[in-house]
Amino acid sequence: MIESVTQAALSSALAGLSARQAAIANNIANVNTTNYRAQRVSFEDALAASVANHDGHVAPVTALSLEPTQLNGNNVNLDTETTSDIETGLRYRFAAQAMTQQFSGIQAAMRTS
Image (cartoon, rainbow, N blue to C red; front, top):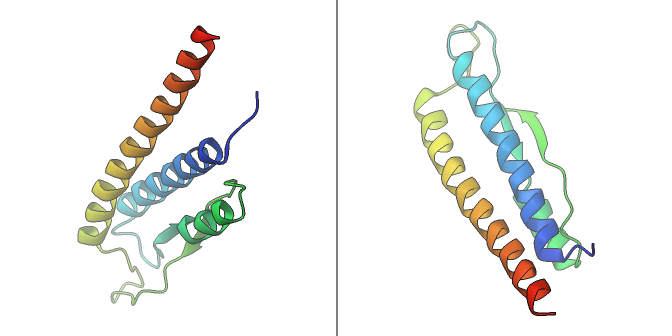
């Protein structure tokens, strides 16, 4: 099957958002761990560049947060993580819905052929 740029981009977005959800869960689980550095997942800028180049394939990048630490060396901010978790969940649902619509369109086209 030939993959479109849109399908590749949606797949990359879902992978990136899934990686971000895992990092957020890990951050929240370690909110009280001494010297724990929060993880941040990025992929949006690389995805935009990839789509501009008519590709759509990117891998998420996980890095340690450079945000200031608390006295115990931990830099997880529970409010930030909670907000990010909600936003990431909404974006994931939107991308999954868009992917479902892509597949529905392909199925409809195959039925009429």
